[in-house]
Length: 98
Image 1 (cartoon, helix red, strand yellow):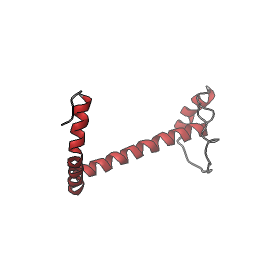
Image 2 (tube, rainbow, N blue to C red; image 1 turned 90 degrees about the vertical axis):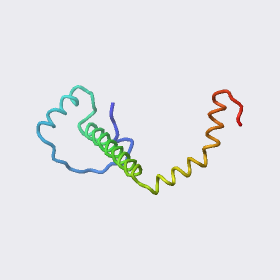
Image 3 (cartoon, rainbow, N blue to C red; image 1 turned 30 degrees about the vertical axis):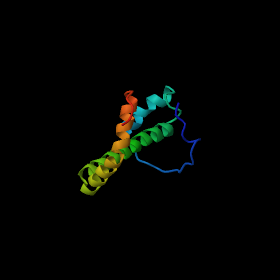
Image 4 (cartoon, one colour; image 1 turned 120 degrees about the vertical axis):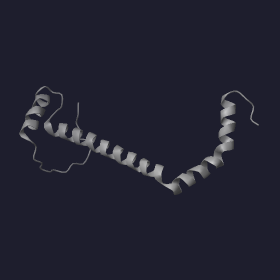
């Protein structure tokens, strides 16, 4: 059951929601799927914002893939760890380092 209001400080606001969407949400409120329409709206908004944040992270990674300075730095870091990476691989496969 969703009840975000008691967990966080809330701010009252007003939104205009299409009539059809309001009617569709009523089913879930009446059948106890959600405690009230506000809880449903908060949960939906949270999920939507998390998806937007995930998309933003993906966009940042896409930019990093095209950033020559980042790629150069990443290659230098990888080179710096190449010996220890190789030793860890050998150890994991049961071989003595060296």
